[in-house]
Amino acid sequence: MKIALQGLCVAVAAGSVAFSGVPASAQAVYTVIIPGGGFGSQAFTDVVAGGIAAAQAFCGELDDDSYKVDCLAERLGQVAKDIPRDSDYAEVQQILKDTADQLADLARANRDPNGVRGRAVSKGETPVTTSRPLNPVAPEALPSVNQQASAILDNTQTLLLRSAEGSESKALQYSRIADALGSSKVLLRSA
Image (tube, rainbow, N blue to C red; front, top):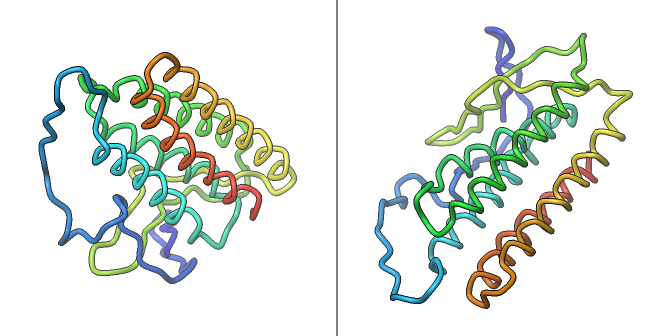
């Protein structure tokens, strides 16, 4: 993957990542009709969980650990943006957006003043580029920032699970999304 830094492109790592977890040629727009009384759909839960897994894979390809927290913030923000506001998943959309904002604020507050902001770009037939330049975290702050980011993800998992209380079908869907989000903490431990 590359990080484009103010007109320069620096090779960071090799690999092909598709945002939604499937190649662009296999992506399609679809409508899910849900029987009355049910919550959400297995298919859409798969899309959200797959988007979170793709975010982890995308950010995991970065060789420079200082960009990973802000990369995760940006990618989770994109997952949230792709969830319709007027759907059964509006609450998930808001929780993921809030999480992305918290992670971005954390990276921004601990930005390396000597580091260069840059966009991450994946390799492959259909390269994925971050929607904004990423902030590198100062090396001396990185261990603390990763711990704080992990705590933000823990809190998000708890919010998702508590939000689903009282509905068995909602609990199952939210649990799968929370599990996908929890696996993103591995990215922070490896940094």
